Image (tube, rainbow, N blue to C red):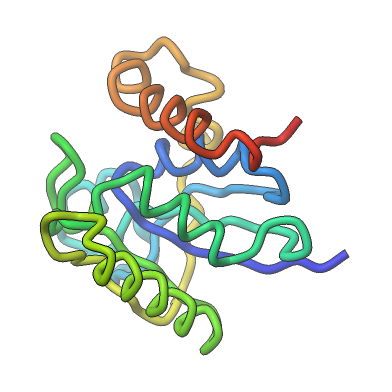
Length: 178
């Protein structure tokens, strides 16, 4: 059984985790921080915008069931890749759109997906998603892991996370875990 890893940032990590947890072929999804300079970032420090980290998810997946390109196709549907350092009301560099690639092949695939979306005019504004090499991963605090699954009726979850999960479920029915 093969395993690969994707690291993605697209706003609040609760949204991405809630979606990728439901993708067939995804083994684990972990919320955390990457792309910054602090040695031991905490949620409070990352939210301040001073550490340079993005809220992100690390997705472990079986590439024989779901490939990296498919994960990116989902990524570009469940967040707005055209807003710089912002997703909805979440504003700051910690909410930036970014793909942290783990290999030259992942970088190439990400570039191809972005080029295709741009060529096909999928978005009316330019895609601003950063494409950078993966660096140090910092797991988020335990209370952030599986947040939506544990708190589906919390205000942010009902207003923001739930609609993203519903959009994913509607558009990617064939990729849902049974």
